[in-house]
Amino acid sequence: MTRNLIKAAAAAVLALSCAACTENKGTGIELLPEEAFAKTVDGKNVAIYTLTNSTTGMTAQLTNYGARLVQLWVPSTDGFKDVVWGYDSIDAYLNAGDKYSGPVVGRYGNRIKDGKFTLDGKEYQLTVNENGNQLHGGAGGFSTKVWDAEQFTDADGNPAVKMTLVSEDGEEGYPGKLTISVTYTLKPANELVIDYTATTDAPTVLNPTSHVYYNLHGTSSKSTDSHLMTIYADSFTLTDSELIPTGEIAPVEGTPMDFRTATAIGARIDTPDYEPLAIGKGYDHNWVLNKHFLVQSKQNDALKDGAYMAAQVYEPSTGIVMTVYTDQPGLQFYAGQGMDGKEIGKRGEIHNVRSGIALEAQNFPDAPNHENFPSSVLRPGETYTQHTIYTFAVK
Image (cartoon, rainbow, N blue to C red):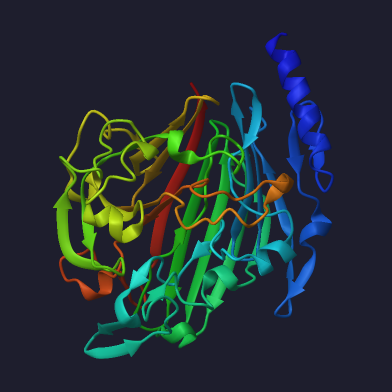
């Protein structure tokens, strides 16, 4: 059977298995319908937005509930694959056990110890939602909000959608009225570009990040343990038993945290008696990107639009290569060990254990409480920016 016939057969099978979807004929891409996301949440209208690039047909679908990436169809050796873990309707997202599938999280992505920090001599008590600490901005953080959305074409003719949110002073305990915008753009070279800007009317801390679960098999029924991972980092931040950084930056050399050369995610994830992995029950750590120390190597000299190469992931069975570029100092890698195999996602697929990885470009966890970590303070008159790119190729 020729490759074209294989692609056509695969597309037909996918179409039959996704009655709630509509197929882009000839591609196998299944679009989630607008009506599946048409709902009013907290008095604001939720919708879904579709972006398709001008070259390969790479397609993203996003919803303004949590400024969330819902689908991302990219080329593989066997047609298009949706490499994003998630659900097929707004109701499924609202009722999901995992609230962090695909959104922008904040104000502070990752963890803040005891939900406390001191800024300009004043201590702030945030809401807590994980073991007495705050995780991803609290239970009512960015991921739970309906953002204002504007779909447009940028000056270069690329499809884009801009999501904007106003976070009021005191929300989840954070000081200052914060206005944040996140713009997703699809570019011709199969690049998903995520740009953030934010301003505040009072001193605050900020660390938003994209919390997408990726699976380069194109299905959550297969483990991501087979993905070959490279992270361009010589060190990582050690944590205590609650995954809060101790402040120590430790070398990866000689440990299961060393991904400086491509290594299968599952190769060392169950290494016995290695405390950092035992604490997280797998990978759930922040790597200190070499860019932060201005350490250059042949692997991470690559610069794309002001962002350095942070990581690369390759799945041999589909040929998909995902490369992450960012201007942030850290990258949180989570290997999906908390997935329980009980929830049903898009196309009726089970969200099995370790069936999605998160690669979160960010400042360091708990940075407001560690003077040796990069500052996360944003003041009036300043503009926060972040530039992160996820690129896709076929090997």
